[in-house]
Length: 84
Image (cartoon, rainbow, N blue to C red; front, side, top):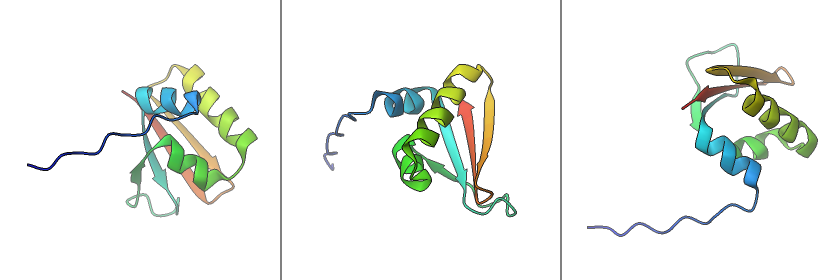
């Protein structure tokens, strides 16, 4: 039986809250809807590359209170947040 490595705790509490409360699907090409991938808040942060936009996006997702929150970033990235 393999022993799993222990995960490293994130310093960014906003990412922790997003990962606890949402399942994130990222689509790099919004025209092709069948290519969505499950992602984490850290990977979404790397894709966006803009700290202010990331914080604004994550706060809107947390405050929306909806089951599904969708956003398009710069017409190239579609991110769906599904509440758990």
